[in-house]
Image (cartoon, rainbow, N blue to C red):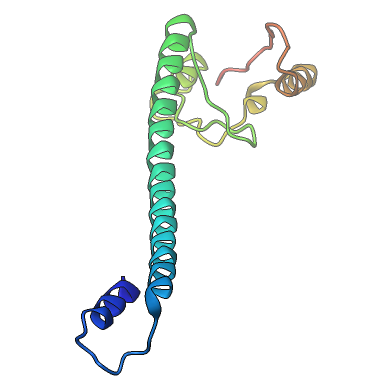
Length: 145
């Protein structure tokens, strides 16, 4: 923008002691400025596009997660979400009620292994989390009694 204004200022004859740039120099400078403008516009467009695309994907992921949790909740007595350290993420009130812990007890931060009295069940559960092709798994959970 500055180069274009500067060149127009000289070619308009408003300044007599302007260096002789010539028509070729003017067009070359204009092309350089145009190229720079295009690069800036593409960068801004890419940055904004990535941000919008990320927001849309996050929103869609939340919708899928909500639908999945709804479906699982309709088929299962209790649904819990585990983090990467295999700890319960949410309050897990349905599991807390099944284990007779009462309404005020939160299971957040507990592991499911904490409720498995048998070492063999804990090992089978841990190995089933490592293998995504594991069929249905039956383990015994200890209630509050």
